[in-house]
Image (cartoon, rainbow, N blue to C red; front, side, top):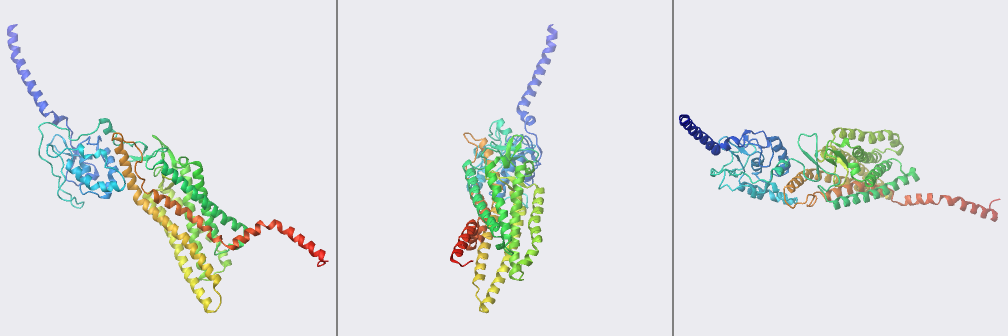
Length: 556
């Protein structure tokens, strides 16, 4: 027994020594095997920075590079602003951190780099009343004096010439430190999800968040209530004004002969448009502009308008009638051109009326169908209305309306010059040109009351299309940041961007219908209505006059 122990004891001592060495090696070098594994950089935004290896999960809690690239989309408005020359480097060091096979950790951004970017980009955020994102709080990054981190380079980043790999502080601490002081793991894993008051839209390549119906995501409740009352008020004024024009035409149709007849059809378009606005106010915004999603109802996002029949129907009515009214404006100016310059009579213009109606009613159908096939219709949270998306507003909204408006203005200018020559000729002949001058004044005022609001509305559309997309992304970024901030109430705590411009756009759109009734504001209209209202009393007066004449012997 003792001999056996003598043989086993040295073996046990040798084995324990080997196990101790292995254990000591694993303790000292265990981070090399369990640390983040470098992988090839595939985030397109970060290519060209002269490092091609990264490691996941990153400092925002994204598990893979696909999630990291989705998370970067929320910061694209800052990139478009080009507020800092180091912004691209800073975002990449956070979302796709530098990884080296010779360093057993991901290399985070230095605090100095974060402060440099924050100093440059805070004015851009302040202009939109948005705070610096809490998830990028510079206090969460380490100073470059005691760890390995990415410093801001001295040279300016040039897109055409890839910059050198950023300078890295070469001081390595004795203990393995956390490269970034992040929040809880649960919050990190939810960075790619939509914040409160937003709904994640499925079936898209990148995560897209739409405002949740019934919540105040981008705009406050009082802003939406005021916008609704504003639109309904002007819609009723437009309805009453255009209805008066149509009833005046019904009372005295002979008064609206060509070239004035297109005014009636223009008023008809705006009368139906005002009815559409009134219906929207009656049924509510959510019944028109909301669609059910997996996570709940949201305002109709882009390319999903066909899933909401009320949204599609309202947009078709509004878009079609808007194009039809502008077409009738161009036809009206064209008829005045033919009448003033080419001396076409009312009968000659009446003979081509079928062709004018075909152009006015069929051409907008083709344009509306083409815009509908593009599926670039989206609902607006502020107004609760469906409209062309901001990304396609230039081509589908501004361009066709601007062409029709410009065509009408050209026709009207040529017709005005022709009327000036006619007036000069009448004066040279010694005849009175009072009636012609009165007509020219009415035409000029009517043209200005139509063209100026229409042009102003298109300018508002262009302004919204350039400002709102970036503002919505920054607002979504603020909502994402609010989720990781303590004592932060989700919702629009800042001034809504473009609120005044949106209200101005709808005012200019509806006020055209209000001023279109200007053409019937004359003494002829008063006589026509008085004749209609006093018609039942005329036979009684005639009968009394006949009896008086018979008593006097005038009539045997």
